[in-house]
Image (cartoon, rainbow, N blue to C red; front, side):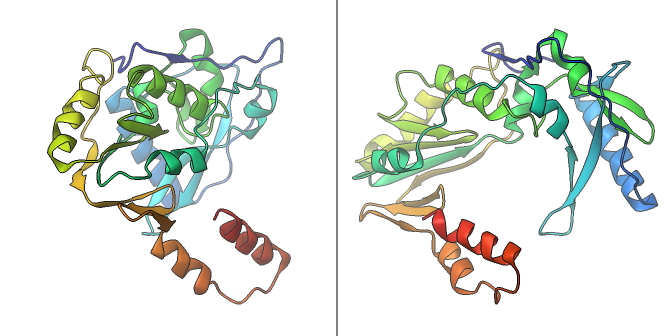
Length: 258
């Protein structure tokens, strides 16, 4: 069912011809994982069978806990998609906004992209090929170039009037902040009421309420100020010996964030 009526996701490709890419070769184990994930998404109403002229291949990405993340390689589709330049908040502005706050609550919207429907006329462009057939997304998938812009537009619409004053949002992370502990908890329902069930279904969000410190956007924030997240500092300090140009690029990318 439709999770939110605030926005829908468009994939504008003009008069480009449909992208048609075959599936990547997969092992028996990977085939079973793809089948399991497809069945789960079908059951949740995230995808549907497709007869689209478009197709993109599935990619399985191994996570740190050795589980697998189901992804679709939309690089060719993204190349011909008209870009949506709706802005994400500047990280330095977001951190400045938290300056002076003493108490924080965080809300992490689980599977946030799946709260937004793909526009009916664009669903066929999300089609992906599996060992068992062709499917397309009804809800917005990860990997589309304009998905972050669409999600941020939805969040800004829902939190209009509160952003930068009592809360800020960066994609699916919502931070509520206040100077006084007596006001932090009442503010959270004030924010949550904007996620009204007919408008946006927040299914089991992760929430931490009324904390004196919070890790956000790679930084630790408290009443004293803002500093790099100690876990990120350890990652820089303990980075393995650089042995290739790729290692150097990875290390510079990690360091330059701060």
